[in-house]
Amino acid sequence: MPAYRAGSTVAIVAPASAAADAADDAAMWLQARNIPVRVMPAARTRMPAPFDYLAGTDAARVQDLHDAFAAPDVGAVWCLQGGFGSWRLLDALDYDLLRRNAKPFIGYSDITALHLAIQRHAGFVTFHGPMLGQDFLAGREPPTEAAVWRMISGGTQPGDPVAPPPAPMLTPLLPGRASGRLVGGNLSLVAALIGTPHEIDTRDAILFIEDVNEAPPRIDRMLSQLREAGKFKGLRGVLAGDFTRSGATDTDELEQLAIATLLQVYFQDLNIPVITGWPSGHGDPNLTLPLGAHVTLDPLRGLIQEQAVVI
Picture 1 (cartoon, rainbow, N blue to C red):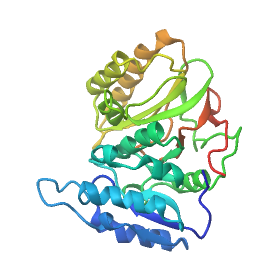
Picture 2: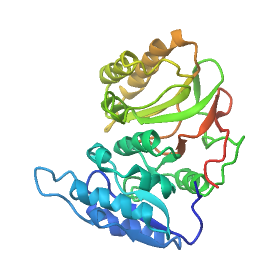
Picture 3: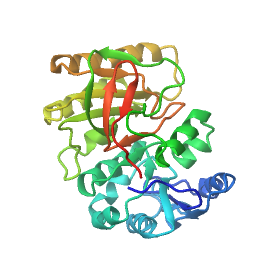
């Protein structure tokens, strides 16, 4: 897949929730960095009620993705916002078109649905990374921006740590070292697509999961669903990112402990490594991960990229 090259256009898309007020601000954020921008039409729109959580019709959002990928001057397709609705597009996407025009595609949260489908049907690496409205206009810490540019521009080479945390946050919950394809994203979306043609393939994989506003009982239920669906068979390792709650209180530390205990309970009998505390997801910083790339989960260095994902 071609790396993003300086001077090529970034297409701003909104495959999920509406954030029309943020589209032009996101464009200015990129232009301030001397990056040409194309705001795709649905990114500036909002559906009427009761679908006012969506940025344009399903057909319009699909067309934006098709046009952004097909445009020869576009070097990266960057999501404006997560929220809800990406799953509505999966059956309508032209995966052959996406495969023929593979380029960096960046987003997270609800965008996980698109990551999973693209990996299933188009087979190129996509980037679980910060979104223009949801992250950069909200003022994420500098490591977030530096990490995404480094990743999509091909700055991370085989043998390099994917994005070393700025502080020693990582916790090897279960010991070991393992290699495999990096798959996953937002746990709620991973669970929601089980039983569909777009469900996650975890065979010989390192599973990355993160989530927001999900209490331990719901995380327990989703992990149970993945296990009962056979998604832990053939799994080689687990990397846990941010599990954040809005309006966090003093109970947040107890919830983090509960989530770590859940991960230990679900994976300890598999004899695979589990590392928690990776700063990707709804927290700050939000470091970029190459979904679909071959990586090594290392208890000392975190995540190591084992192949060039953009050239």
